[in-house]
Length: 273
Ligand code: BTN
Image (tube, rainbow, N blue to C red):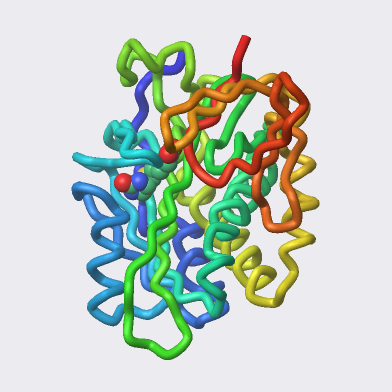
């Protein structure tokens, strides 16, 4: 059982200095909000208003934190990491989905560096410990008038010291936190510093055309390869089959019970018994 505790993101921490000063773009601007509807919204508004790439918006709590497919992201105060990074990558539109995969690898590497845990990624954006989700990634794009660049808001939520009591009943067998898995309260500032460092490195790899290296790292952390899955297609059909992994573009392939291989471009994938 994990008790509540009073860690906050403490801007006076040494970790905070690392977050601010190790950016490849120079000094990173970090905005720490007590509360906001969604750090993705706050970062998007800033990005559209001309805020440079590299700025990070973090919040102690979010009143309308959201995930993929319109889901709610529970954001209890002071126990999780809820942050968004403004990116303006030099990438073709067709390659933007790769940012989510690259961020998943980056987030896992940061957790591996900061804890004894070995998280996995459930394609495309769920961060998993065993069968339970402890984090997620929400990538959204916006239009800006800078030549050749797209505004990308990369939002990450991580349950750091979240307790079961803080989560709604329907999530209690599906969700976990770093503290629930280890009994340790990891400092969110240090995790945030590790994550933004890994994310920047991953975005640089992508911009440098090295997605194949990211794919290899993804494969080592793939939570679903070889497993029986249920895919709810965007058209509302259910396909059951086994994940045969990702292709060179990062698209998931599922072999259904009749042997037909489907490209999963969107929709929802769940474990099936
Ligand atoms: C998912 O699980 O589908 C993605 C969850 C992403 C949650 C993070 S928390 C910070 C940022 N702000 C949001 O509203 N969502 C992301």
